[in-house]
Amino acid sequence: MKFRRNPWVLYLLSLGFVPLIWHRGIGIFEWAVYDFAGYVVLPLIAAVLLKFKPGELGFKAPNRNGWIMFLLLFAASVPISLYGLTIPEMRSYYPIFSYSSMMDFAVKELVMGVIMFAHEAFYRGVLLFPLARKNEWLAVLLQDVPYTLIHVGKPGVEIPYAFVAGIIFAKMDLKGDSFIPSFLLHWLGSAFFDVLCVAV
Image 1 (tube, rainbow, N blue to C red):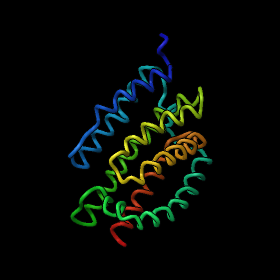
Image 2 (tube, rainbow, N blue to C red):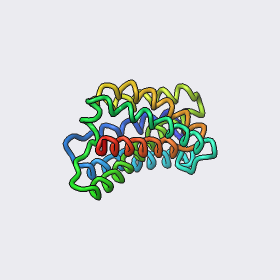
Image 3 (cartoon, helix red, strand yellow):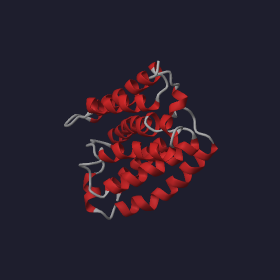
């Protein structure tokens, strides 16, 4: 079949799942279920039907380069987070969930980890890796545009930040041969900023 192992078919099919998971006014736990289903389960089913292996989509442990780049970029994210505290719009927006206790806060940060895993698996995994084997920079841009668009409605400064971060994350993951570095950077960086917003 001409569709078998075609990265463009996988890309377009996967983008078609995105409208299915648009949601407003639901709780964080429902949000995690929607995102995991639409960003991970459905694209993986499509990928397997097209004869892609999960490892070809970045679903595997990163190599040494990935770990090194994650550590360096996480260190670099600390001063960026501290700067973010000086922006009132950011401080009033985060954390994006309500919480009743420190235990509730911790549980919801773990749930945010599920959401961010789903996002990174989709944008830096499914959309990126197969196309990158054909044209790396085109693949980087084609995953970055929809990733940036999903940030519309958040604080304005996040739009250009998401665009730049999407490129950096993609290059890091391609070097690391896995989307796990960007997942950890995205999640831990977000959790660190949430803690700062609550504690400072």
